[in-house]
Image (cartoon, rainbow, N blue to C red; front, side):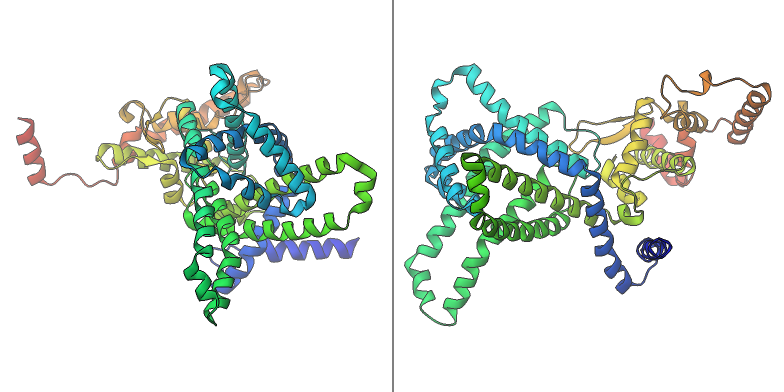
Length: 458
């Protein structure tokens, strides 16, 4: 037991005992993948990612036929509806003959749905079922990216409809163009010429894999309610694509040798295998999103814990810096700050900034614009808000109504001490406002500029 404890302690010190910001480059390149692997394994082990993957399986089963029905209606308008069955067959290929059976049943259900005769209520329920799936996906991605706020309802509706209308068209059109390209006589002629033939065959073999990565990248950039860099999305999509392809081969081999399970479960085997397949696919999607998140915000890998625990001192400094940046840009007519730009300026994860921003916003000191993404401006003049008020807001931001300082026992000496601390803070800050703080480092206008300003005022 003692030896195991020592090994665990040494492993912990090796992995987390060094600040990556000051570590040599080679050591940083070595530790970052290890920390990412640990973080992803920790997230899976804690159960939230697996729970959300299971939830998405249930929602997918309810939404699959309506989703394909809407996609089929859109594709039918462009004459590429015949690509639906091959795409579904390719997706369910690891299930073998059972995948073909599921495909035929789903296509049969889709063909039986006549969107034109559903009526307004039926069409509304059809769209609602599909939007529920997309909303669940967004919530799962927001959890992975530590985003606490969902998209506004109007923005959510417009973006989801864009995905429903444009996404299937792009995917199936790309598949159709690819099939037509490799089936053309020119390409067939090139295949007969070596070594061009081997190169074309290699490209044809890699193309489905590249299309999967492109699809994952598109989802990772679009679905979370935060700005995802393309490079980070591509890293997560590449890992997810490799896992997805590997999973397909493994599951196909497992199902091919699982005649015993088929004999036991009989007709239920197809249901069980399809649900396992859906669950593992969603788990891979969320794992890829998690890797993209850690790649974009390596600061999240500074601690073995998933959530950052901010001390009061750190919260106060972040709040003062945020007020300074927002106020300075506002009073100097510079572009307003967004959540992502503030996180980048501070060099901390978005979730850290968001928790402080929400506390300041609830207090009515700042407000967000209607831009996408929203930007932050003073909700009222910073001249009327003191630094002491901001710090007091941070001190009481996470207090619960049933457990706050007022309901705790009152001891005379403790109350006197707390009152003296408040008086000392007031005396030290001397009523300094947030505008004073924001403009302290801004140089005053030169005499020439001041005269020009007075001339304009006159």
